[in-house]
Amino acid sequence: MEEAVAHSMRDSMVNDYLKERLERLKDNSEGAVADYIPELAAADDSPFSVAICTTNGQVYAEGLNDGDVDLEFTIQSMSKPFAYALALEERGVEEVAKYVGVEPSGEAFNELSLEGETKRPMNPMINAGAIAINQMINGEDSTVEERVEKIRQFFSKLAGRELSIDEDVSTSEIETSDRNLSIAHMLRSYGMVNDSAHDAVESYTKQCSIKVTVSDLAMMAATLANGGVQPQTGERVCGRLVARHVQAVMASAGMYNGAGQWMATVGIPAKSGVSGGIMGTLPGRLGLAAFSPKLNEKGNSVRAKKLFQTLSWDMGLHLMEAEAHGRVCVRSITSEEVPAADKGIKTTVRLQGDIDFSAAENFWRIIQDHGIPSKTLFLDLEKVDQVNAIGNEMLKEAKSRLTKAGYNVTIVDPDKVLK
Ligand code: GLU
Image (cartoon, rainbow, N blue to C red; front, side, top):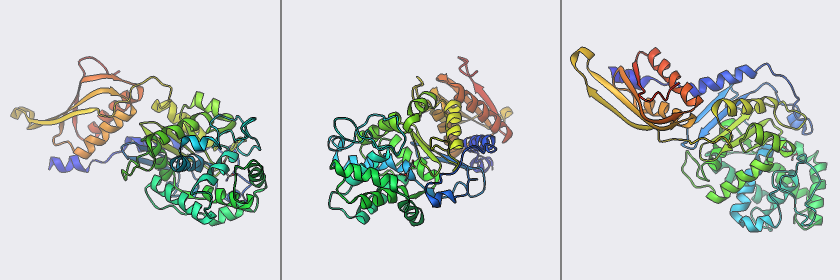
């Protein structure tokens, strides 16, 4: 009987935490939806959602309102790092670098600018670079349809499911694309674009109109964070060095003219899109995405940006934080008979290494997957080296949740690693 109780316990403290953080920001109504694409101007501005995908493939998604988690929106500029990955896969880093640089531009996303001497776009994260990158995919002779299909398939592999294109949004954007058309003309004049300016912009705009959910984005990001292997399907979607390179460029240029400030305060390589999403990667650890349509004057979602700041702070996700990230934290789970006075069986879960968010999340999931065969549980921290702030909080929370669920929990902590 006891075993049935153990196995039925499904409790995600990560989901509860995410939900609570969404709630805290729900009343923030700053910003405005993007209005330069008519279809986006008409979008509902109430959705607010977040998803985390670990490199083990575990997804935690939460929305403020019913349906927010499953809502599809267009990927927009968050497509840029992934299209860049595809171009790098097809053409190699050196060949791509002949056409598009890797330096932060410090300019707005749709700036008409090229590098002084080379006449390359500064980087693939601004529109000039992204239009040139789009052109490099599927060879010079590709039709727009073939190129877009290649990109759609690649993005689908990253997300682990078939994605589709929002034709209404792409048609609506093409009708108001003067700015991107002038960028394409400029690129053509330097031989960076082969197609007509119209075709180049149409192809790029369709890439931007691929529909994703917040969980799709988190998984696409987690694939980069996982060195190119999709954490749920196990498929290698791009090379390890390509994944690393893309994240490096995202870190320095992903947030346009706010990239420096973003890296200093949030510390997560990230890319935003005018539909209201922000997606970020933490190499070796996780992919993260948030969505809320109202944007600030720089074109970044107000609530998604605040959420990233909060999560980075709470969960110790800043890339430059000098912390080790133990993911193999459960050393063993054993059960033994104890004298009759103790009523039967006791289970001991032994942890090891450094306990941070990744380790604590891993521990919590493993004991739920494994099940706890007895009501008496010892959590042995003898082999734990250190516990960071979030690890500490999660272990304490774990104890309190297990106690509430009817377990008799004893923490064995001879070196006093828990605060
Ligand atoms: N399709 C949009 C454009 O090029 C994407 C911009 C963005 O998301 O930042 O204007």
